[in-house]
Length: 83
Ligand SMILES: [Zn+2]
Image (cartoon, rainbow, N blue to C red; front, side, top):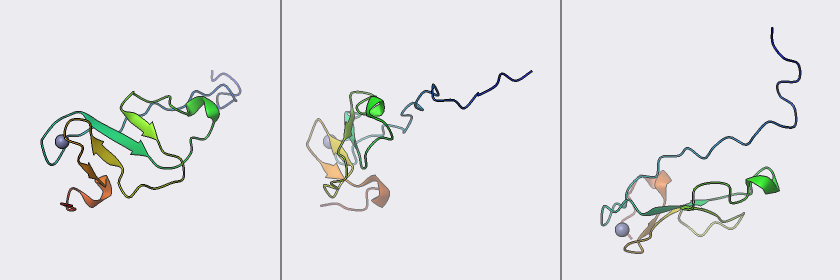
């Protein structure tokens, strides 16, 4: 038997499960993800791991940065952008 209202308002936000990856420059795993766009609800804001930074609607031109060497890149370019 399925309980009713399984998709009710108490549905928790899905966990942030994007692979963290590594820096294409120095190979560090101290990668920070810049998440473009606003979360669906205020509760989600900042709910990810501490290496996830919500940057709202302002696209800085990259969505990954390295905490070790400061390199920034766009994950969608698959590391092809070598500054
Ligand atoms: Zn790096």
